[in-house]
Amino acid sequence: MAIYDTEEEQLEQLKKWWEANQTSLIAGVVTAIVLVSGWNLWQNHQLEKRAQASQMYQQLLDSAAKDNSESTEKLAERLPIEFPGTAYAHYAGLQLAKSKVQKGDLEGAKAILEKSIKEADSDELRHVARLRLIQLMLATGQYEQGLQLIAAVDPAKSEGFSASYDELQGDLYVALDRLDEARSAYQSAIRTGQATPLTQFKLDDVATPGNAATAAAN
Image (tube, rainbow, N blue to C red):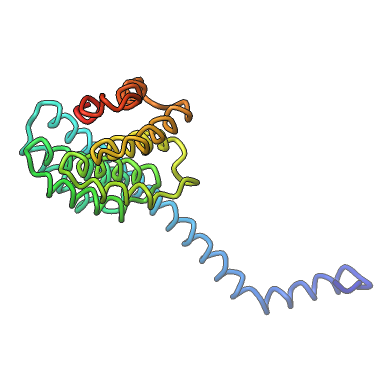
């Protein structure tokens, strides 16, 4: 800013500057207030939305706990419609797939899980949906398709789930009577330090070629 000789000159320059810029300054302040207010309203709306989704999801879990499949499926179908994009919508999809399995509709369950893998907004949800889909493939004899799903998983993004993938891979290899590969898969699962105790039993079963039938049954 220029140096003025007197306070009067400074005040006069400030007055002229204010007159020249007051409109844009006021507009900027108003815009800022509107933006902040709008942001706060949006945040409050999102909080309310999540609370409502959480409440509906709890109702879904209560229905599932009571084995009320009709109510469970209705709530699971409503959640993604009324609260799309929320984590609860994806949780509802997993619950709906479980209900389909319990009713014997395996193809319906597979379709739901495939959709969850594509649309879930977190790696964790995608892993859970993929693991459940692979389990269904194992149960329905789609062994090669299950192995392909596992092969497509990025190891760098599967931390915390690698033991589950390895164990399922071992199960698929056993079903295909590829016992050497099954042993390697089970051993890999155990090396993660996160394998279930059942994994060691499965490994013991395939350690001796004569136990292949037992391993397949497990």
